[in-house]
Image (tube, rainbow, N blue to C red; front, side, top):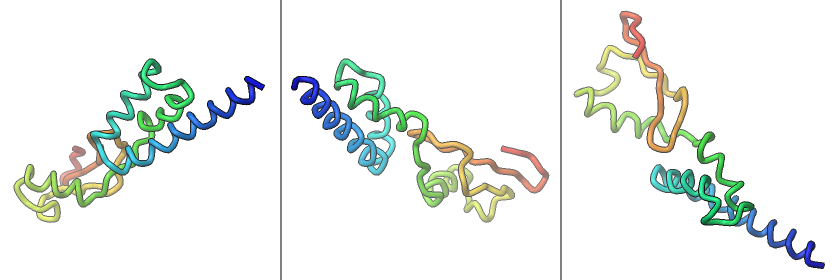
Length: 111
């Protein structure tokens, strides 16, 4: 009988952990970072819950390219369309606080 209760508890705790991942992704970088930290802290949550957080470490969804433009254009001093650089809209990789985009200039230089 105890084993059944333990399995049910473990399933509920795992479901709790899984239910936290989506909101962390939707709320953005700060919450993704909190989820990443949580995924390494088995002393804070039960292991069944912590086991659901690793995707926040290695499968973070990218944020929209419009956000990239909003940050990059002031740094470049002009709109991306006016700069002699072709930014690929799809990132090479995504992390909690940054994306990596491949870009090339008309001279072929890769940024």
